[in-house]
Image (cartoon, rainbow, N blue to C red; front, side, top):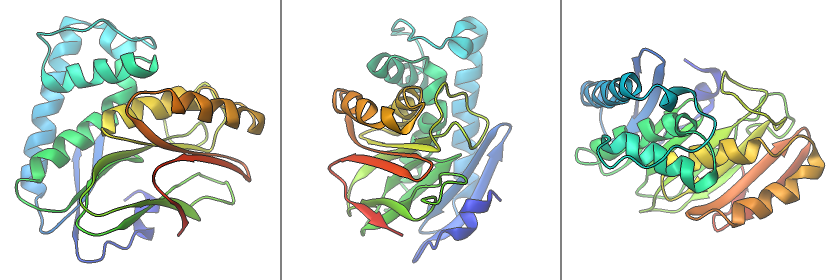
Length: 236
């Protein structure tokens, strides 16, 4: 289990992990739905992998791709997220998979949280705090975002110092809240690319305000933090 997962206290929910190739999901629901989650993640992965065979640049482009009305829904979601914030579609893959699995499980559980390498889809029945993991920053796991009840959103984090994802910036964490997890994932990547020093935080926040569908951002680099958005920043 990824170390930060041990720090989470899922009150009232059952937690389980689902893994398929590079995908490593940690899921919280009202009961163990690992079988259903695995079936859905494999279905979504097959669609993405088949599309890459047809259109290889989907897997490698750092720039937005053109819309393809014949692509599977998960692929269209990734392409559209990249277009909104100006990045390649694979910048949205973790969030898109988390959201796809989470949406499927909502038919079986009123409350679902799906975490995929720092990218989270959640629909909660009571207020929940989402902590921000920022590597070696002294602010790591000390602050988070409070998500109100009955809201379905994505909370996704990009980092230049944690994990294998590509970032052209230096931020320890850029956490984005958006109406979809795919969009939040892509936006976190785009904004993370802008933050090379603490002085870049205001410019990145200004950029986030202009991204359609983005509802908040928290940026951490070292011991510096900047935040904007409709969801409260809280201590955790």
